[in-house]
Length: 423
Ligand SMILES: NC(=O)c1ccc[n+]([C@@H]2O[C@H](COP(=O)([O-])OP(=O)(O)OC[C@H]3O[C@@H](n4cnc5c(N)ncnc54)[C@H](O)[C@@H]3O)[C@@H](O)[C@H]2O)c1
Ligand SMILES: O=P(O)(O)OC[C@H](O)CO
Image (tube, rainbow, N blue to C red; front, side, top):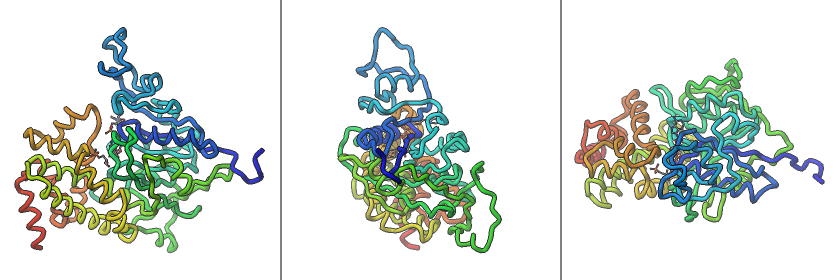
């Protein structure tokens, strides 16, 4: 019998996204919801962008009697417990349920884990507006930033503001295929919700939401202004007391595995920016490696890249960003190292230089539907810097876009970075 005041409800968890990383995180979470019935409902819903998929001939699930007929990806996942397209040859826990409706998957969930390529989050988030528990909490595993010429925001902020909830961030040196095989690594989770009845984090770009409260700005609201002068209009709703608390301990329990170690921090901006900006640097590392310049050149672009990542964080997210998040945590320097060693951005940029074709062509040919984040992030960050006349202050970020768009070549990198050293 439950004792007075003890939680009587369990958290339902939904994973929004089912790509290479989305499916891996679903595996981790589903293993933990099964192991911790005192906190979580065992079943984990996973929203799948529905598509018709052929089971590959070399898959153990290939059925020659079905021949070449494609099947729905949700049906394949729910039948074989494997995402044969985005995470092949990895057994998924049976308590993961693939669902093609994001609204249905998220219904009644108190924990929403956002894990999809950043170019798709806008449309999905829109569908969720007004259709989630008002006291839900989110974790964004998305590595990218939301940029317009006038604004920059973190996806954790943007999701939180759009849906009227608080959203933290998970990021680290985390190549999905290695983790899916249960090879040990670390990650960083930032979770720092403001007090109840306070504004949610910092506000974001133009994400109109039914759950926003129309507030008149008072002098007290000025305290909620962030470094870009934005004021949040969302108030955080309290989690009903029937649930176990949603704090660092609960989130650590949800994500920690013996092969996936978790450090909890509070610097949401630092964690999110590390994951987004390292993708630009990984392209540069791939460029110089593809050119055959070896490890010293790669280390040089990583050094400059790390400096630009910290500078960008400090310049546009001010006091909220800790330099130590970049230099001491998995989401910072460790992710930079792994991404510049074996990440998709690095590998595709390297192949593009070796073959003399564009990175986009390599992505389309080699990744079987997986998406690079570095090419779009390089463009988005550049448009934000250009609008402020700051391109020259970020020579590596700028060089990467100029190489992608053909205005410079890899051979120009040393001179472009040397010019910055002279300033
Ligand atoms: N893969 C990794 O090793 C890894 C590791 C850590 C973080 N991340 C980050 O996690 C996020 C998700 O990456 P991923 O590897 O799971 O994705 P992915 O690269 O495997 O992308 C494919 C996913 O995009 C979906 N998709 C395709 N078209 C779509 C559309 N029109 N609308 C909505 N969805 C569509 C597909 O269904 C599939 O789920 C990214 O921000 C990435 O940087 C990836
Ligand atoms: O394969 P990438 O380049 O998208 O990088 C994957 C992860 O972000 C590495 O931590």
